[in-house]
Image 1: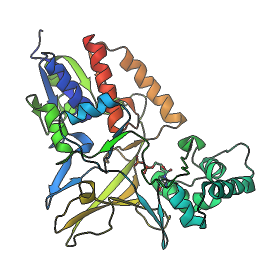
Image 2 (image 1 turned 90 degrees about the vertical axis):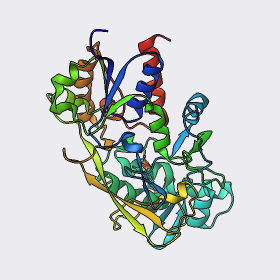
Image 3 (image 1 turned 135 degrees about the horizontal axis):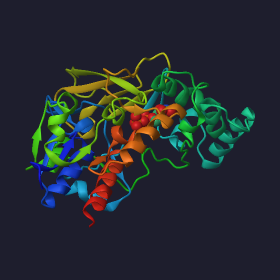
Length: 369
Ligand code: UDP
């Protein structure tokens, strides 16, 4: 190797950390840089009153892939947390995802047959043949009651526009489950790292050189000269100087509060589904780890319009942004010393297990093993 490092990894999130771990396991020298003051990207947790606080939004690990489950468990043991959010609509409370408990709460029906008939009759009443927007799509899938109480307000808050202006493709399907099962995910494996996500991300980068508070773009030439290869996990449009325009996102504002109470809401995730409440959900972090601390930390999640100074969370994969991304992707495909990976570089809303899968696949391709 001609330069100081084999790999410069820009961004210490899951993609960069998994790549760095695997590359250094194969004898490659790696340097990770990150503009934040901590590693771990958006799964980073901060310990407050003995509670692991998910500072960049709640992260619940789930996967169907045993090899990915075994991979994360080789760094930290996972607990048996099962996500079963509840939804508040005005003074009513519903179980999620939409299941027999929800249908009982909505209509006082107790059998799958009654629930199916109720939903079908509401779908028939709408008589929509070709859904032209998200509202019509939802009505066509679950009918008016579920749409108005549990989908409309939440979705409009999250995306900052009316459901009739949102494209139908955002909700191709809305799972309805005709069993009394409040488990939000369908995956075989699910849990939270015992002791928090930092154990996972710190385990991945253990023994690897890492420089924090470093902005690649402030001294690009220097950093590009330091390694033979680059793994870039930041915004792909910024990498290419925004030459085809900005890729747009939805952002979030998290309001964290420490409360002098042991148990605030009795569940890790409570959604607020009416439009009039400005936040979409309240997270009570201790319940991810069955915490028994005397205090509690809650986080209200306010969706907000994204601007360059805000954290980019949800890519807006509409026609315009998809076209812009394609142009950047074409440039990226021509690089032979730069690998682009992760949510921001691939402009794709990835779950954690998908990021790990994608990083491991990249490793396999790069190192031919
Ligand atoms: N959603 C909804 N009601 C809910 C929760 C979710 O209608 O109570 C829909 C909504 O359209 C939202 C999408 O599901 O945009 C994904 O939401 P979720 O909060 O599950 O995504 P996350 O941010 O957790 O990945």
